[in-house]
Length: 155
Length: 283
Image (cartoon, each protein chain N blue to C red):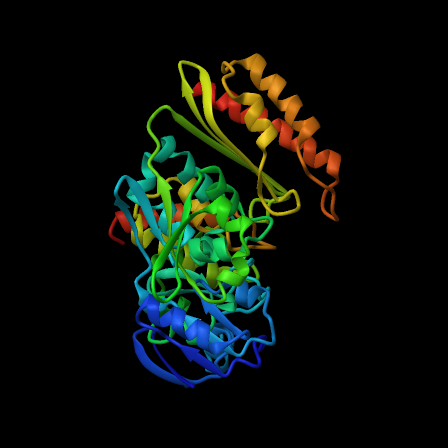
């Protein structure tokens, strides 16, 4: 069957098998910034925004989100034009191996889109589905707080 | 990783009547898909047909006739973040919802899916049983409203092969009602090894109209009638909380499994029972 998505602002059409996962379809079509790992929705490495909500693509069927708007980490910012969250993660040393980073930033981005001035508790809750096994969470939380500061300053 | 290899067709009905009709016509190897978490995390390779509920507009939380009506495809996050939950039972339901699983899963787990799966560890099922929710299903011709405890006493899995869950109804309890629920997990995002909920009306410190439910026993959530009887007409106090904790530990119907032993589960249940009553006194 065919599915249609708007990915990072571009209209796309893919041939899929009806039982395929969104993660597999996107990676097969070169959206390799989305990382696959647990296939249970528990690690968060494969998170993207689907119609503005952060979701795990490893537990989402590609057919289920036909016609959805999808934003990956590359839709938030690029190497040449990074988003403030990406800058803040680098600045605060919140990236080590980088495997979890796209998903974590997606979750943080979803939080700030709906709540530009979150409490620390809300920040922690927003990334509680993104597991990190090397950097740890302190730097990530600091980075999100730093990004909020930058966003408030209009930078 | 293609987990659902045999899926050959997908349907996107526009009405709940159409969804129920498709379900009846498509046979045993068909699944209704709300959030899709259970289907993808625990895939059944025999499934051949999927019916997606995306177009049914069952994504709502509204107040109707003194009840809070929650559409079947409403996610935990949507319910937790809704205005309706802010003051509901002093915000304790909202706090509970925010603590279940992780943000990415809360964004996917739906009310209808939780009710339909009735996973033994489900916090949502324990919560809905404690809150004496009603379940509304649609069989393609009419809506049928059933108290959730009766729904689970019936052959609900057979019913859901021919009917679609439309919504969950919560009563709007007055300010004399108190609600508390605790969940024990190995880490913050793991499935609970025990959950324990109490809803009670407390009038001038006298406890009435109590619902007590224990889930992840590790069997499915069940009402704890003995404990309800124990608390009925008692006066809320620290001594009662202490006594109640011991009673629960001695009488709760739990078992051991690979994760945690029977005695430990019973002990945790007793602690939760005591803590919830102590919190009721602080409210």
